[in-house]
Amino acid sequence: MSYKAPVEQIDFILSHVVPFGDLSATSRFAEATAETATAILSEAGKLAQNVLAPLNRAGDEHPARLENGVVRSSPGFAEGFRAIADGGWVGVSADPEYGGMGLPQALNMAVAEMMSGACLALQLNPLLTQGQIEALEHHASDELKALYLPKLIGGEWSGTMNLTEPGAGSDVGALTTRAEPAGDGTYRIRGQKIYITWGDSDVTANTCHLVLARLPGAAKGTRGISLFMVPKLIPDDEGNPGVANSLKVVSLEEKLGIHGSPTCVMSYEGATGWLVGEEHKGMAAMFTMMNVARLGVGMQGVGVAEAALQKAVAYATDRSQMGPIIRHPDVRRMLATARAEVFAARAIGLGCATAIDMARATGEVEHAARAAFLTPIAKAYGTDVGIRVADMGVQVHGGMGYVEETGAAQYLRDVRITSIYEGTNGIQAMDLVGRKLADGGDAALRLLDEVADGAKAAQSAHPDLAHQLWQAAETLREATHALLEREMPDRFAGAVPYLTAFARVLGGHYHLRAAVAGGAAHQALARVFLARVLPRYVGDLAEVQAGVADLLALDDAALAGEHAA
Image (cartoon, rainbow, N blue to C red):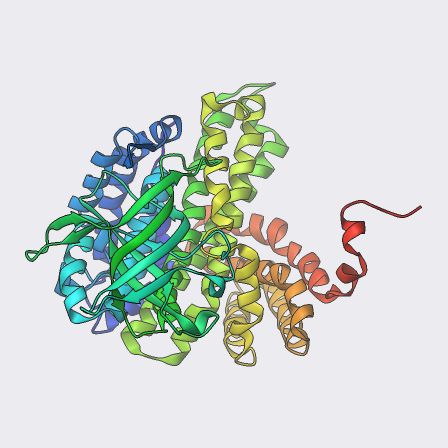
């Protein structure tokens, strides 16, 4: 079975589960009607399943390669990217002044999910480019915007972000890349960056790097970091790719998955760069790019989960062992639970994107706070679900899942990176219980109020489901108050289970909304989630309560298994 874009499922969530309809009442997104959304999803779905999905295996079996300093893409990737670019899909949410569609991020993320499910390795290219577009729109000078945005939005050029160095991963402030003023308004960039996704390619005419570097005399740590635009080919006076810049691809990483996506080690050897934003304010500009990318990565997890689940259902339908194995209770349990979690993760991601859109359209602080709170949840839960469902897909296939012939293993190998890049899921969780609870828990508690109110409203139609969800929301509310009283080490020790518990409660909320708005199928799926997935929050919160003391009681030797007699 080939990948089928889940257009109807996404459309249902946007129409009945998350407040996407509120966007068309704003002046910024007045054109984002239900009809527009359906048309966009339909066209993007055709592209995903008819053009991109057939490239997925080719990218895995014929990885990107480095030849004489030039990256050669996997078979068909150049044509696939051109179809993305020519359809305007890179610029779905970009500023119309520079050629974008100006549509909500909710639609952009829905499109990203379908493209990720079809071919994650290729979808990474427009994802990074979209993040760069976002950073330039908010922070670049008018001159840089005029030069780069039309090319990036149109897909003529592609974009990357360069943060990580051999000695500076999550601790970005430890970076050593230097930027020295050249005296003509440009800078000379020197240093090495690693794990640069699509750091070079032959699918676009130019690759544009956003590079974090430190100016002379800058403060240590993140406060002394600036951001620079460093193109592979320096634009000439007409804005066309000109002479080669002083940078190169040193090597490509050999990875577990996403083989068609070239992950580069980049060397900057006095490369010419232009300052983006203010000096020493580079992290603020880069976080603009990273926050969009984090939500996008969450939707990547959802997309791969959908594709892996489709393949597992098809195999279970066709495979007969004392009858089709899709009728076996344990196989049925795996598939039903996976489908329920995919729905929940998709709804959380689209709910987060809608909050981002409402914040931009209205300027209201409450929408911005909701978007900020939901972003780490959407990223972490979406990717955790992606990994769980892809792993389940291998299990349903049995021995055939463990061999490459079926393609089930590729989904697990590809999606495994998503819980690591753009900030590991542990970092997302620490952000949630740290910065995102710094408001005294206001954003969290407002969300829980909404969940509880929704449960009360559904009490007459679905009393059993509503009561389960209301009880979970109230228990999570108590846990949130308790967490706010704790010191950071205790918070961090329980950060991941707290995030997971919150995701499960939100997932139950969205399932209940679907059960109220939809028919028997949505009600049955909601029962699966609330009976089999939601109750796990109790164990999550028990781990949150445990704190850090028992973890610290184990010394390093004990963790290594070196126990004294």
